[in-house]
Length: 152
Ligand SMILES: [Zn+2]
Image 1 (cartoon, rainbow, N blue to C red):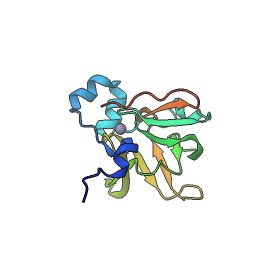
Image 2 (image 1 turned 60 degrees about the horizontal axis):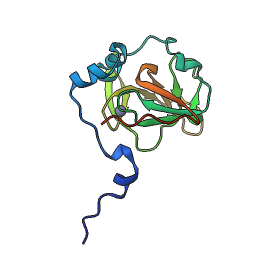
Image 3 (image 1 turned 45 degrees about the vertical axis):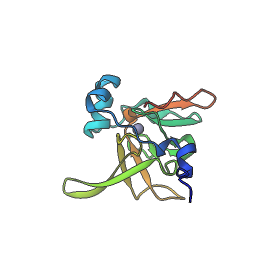
């Protein structure tokens, strides 16, 4: 018997949660981004510059900088929010919430718990999913640029 750590812990940054108080996050983030990430606000449709982002690259959690999506799974859903048909495996947690009494699935960054958006079942193939994400909750890093360090 060994006490070897879970193999993912060494290689997958998502395996190490970050726990900060709301006050700490508030001091690190713009007020609008804080409102989306930690108060589950939804940004107005068509307001995010990431709607038009077409370059190759990586989309990180704006709070803790964990990579959540890549440009290869982004598509134009026409909804006015950045949309993806797949997340990087293991990077999101989900919970059901109720909006106008209809159940829908909320998702958030697995590492810091920051709210990202809602996932629906009307996305394109191959997954059929639509991750409808607040642009304020993401940071885009174009291919070839260094990712910022994870916030700890
Ligand atoms: Zn995060």
